[in-house]
Amino acid sequence: MRILGLSAFYHDSAACLVEDGVLRAAAQEERFSRKKHDSRFPSSSVASCLEAGGITPSELDAVAFYDKPWLKFERLLETYLGFAPRGLPSFYKSMPLWLRQKLWMESLIRRELVGYEGKIYFPEHHQSHAASAFYPSPFDRAAVLTCDGVGEWATASWGVGSGKDLELRQELHFPHSLGLLYSAFTYYTGFRVNSGEYKIMGLAPYGQPKYVDEILDHLVDLRDDGSFRLDMRYFNYCQGLTMTSKAFDELFGGPPRKPESDLGQKQMDLARSVQEVTEEIMMRMARHVRRETGERRLCLAGGVALNCVANGKILRAEVFDDLWIQPAAGDAGGALGAALFVWHQVRGEPRVTNGTSDSQRGSYLGSFYSTDEIVDWLEGRSIPHHRSSAAEVVETVSRLMAEERVVGWFSGPMEFGPRALGGRSILGDARSTKMQTTMNLKIKYRESFRPFAPACLAEDVKEYFELDGASPYMLLVAPVQNGRRRAMTSEQEDLFGIAKLNVPRSDIPAVTHVDYSARVQTVHRETNPRFHALLEAFKRRTGYGVVVNTSFNVRGEPIVCTPRDAYLCFMRTEMDVLVLEDCVLYKEEQPDFREEGDWRELYALD
View 1 (tube, rainbow, N blue to C red):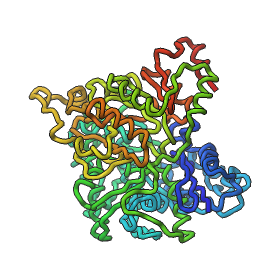
View 2 (cartoon, helix red, strand yellow; view 1 turned 90 degrees about the vertical axis):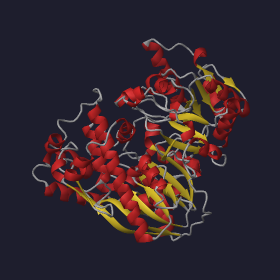
View 3 (cartoon, rainbow, N blue to C red; view 1 turned 135 degrees about the horizontal axis):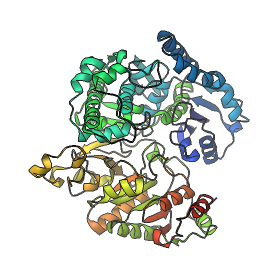
View 4 (cartoon, rainbow, N blue to C red; view 1 turned 120 degrees about the vertical axis):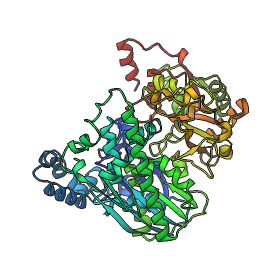
């Protein structure tokens, strides 16, 4: 049985193909459209998934959409009526799209899937999140916790999965939302909502938690079980076009920071404060779920589950024996969850688990290009390159990284989810004291405070990090081992804010954040043997089985999808080397694209 899962029309549209319960393919629309967080119907993602399955829409047995549009519309109407007439501007802005498109989802899906005549299912939003968390996990039984901005009405939920069965037992409802609380601070500190939340998480260690009391005294009425109510006087997302209100501005001493303006200590302190509140809420939720269910394992999904700092603290607190977090925890993963919901819940098909490895296949579920296809593309455009064996490429790249060269790594299937996991990655030497600055300012063109993540041989992880277990999807933050840390001088201890950035904190400074933490990816031979072999080669050469791994893109753009995308990114940045499967490209050998006409030629590569 072939089931197509879909998510669309909020952010991070995606498609997923499940065949007889097996994840066959999954992709986000932004990778094809090159529009970050693309919310349109995922036509290209659907085409990619169907191509991977070798089928047409007429050969599908079921289609599942990740939420219930009519129930969401009901929530919107009730909210606008409840805040009338203040919500009229927002009402007028949103209604045309709903009346023209979103309410007629079944008709729209059938128009897009020409030839499909079967049934279309609409699980609820948090059912899709919960299914994406539990069903691919390695656990036969587990508690499930979902937390995001908002679905239809639910903003968080918890329940229990057992075998093929999944039951949600309790929900927190809009407008009381941890995801929207975090987004309010994202907006107030000058970053883009639904895109900049991870910047708040990265900025937090530079600040002090001086606003925690204000948040808990004025914004959030927090209970012991992790449930809470927000004082809506401070927020504007129910009725307006902004996240926060004038009362919020008054409480925190002024208007929101203008985007792209200088960051100050205030923004760092706000980031630290909302991060600590988020961690406390997530911890209370997790403890409550453990008490109520008695389960020893926890599965997480929803956008808040991408907060890897909170995830790491839950794991280290031993609230549960083990965690599994959906790598595409946001709305994109809802497509995957919706398809698996139909397979197990609607069809009643059993699950098979082994208790150790998940069924997500490392989340390498996207499109793939063979070396022959890549060579044809390169030669057709007279692009200089060197083709070698796979083993030679690994040795060459390990040597180049040891020389502090920055490498674009395009290998195997594209990852599903927001993290680059060694399929579409930019790699560097974690030992380098200049690598973070080089990558941020010359490659990624992003804020200097943003930390980079380590990719580490799974078998060596305890040599570098205080992490008991695996973190294959870069969704857990862990402390760097004490023995690798560098003590700070008294002068360095007195530094504040961004001044802390250039102080090396360990013998792997490029991946050690200012609080001695790191967002760890463990690389496993079973799911990505080529990337694992590269780390092994680097370890043989340097003694270190860990490298910098960041996503293959520049600021404001999605991760690259095709060889063309990768080559464009390579040429537009100060990256040194590009690897396209078994082909190695050196920057110094490429055409000198400098003039406007040359760039038009480069963009016209296809």
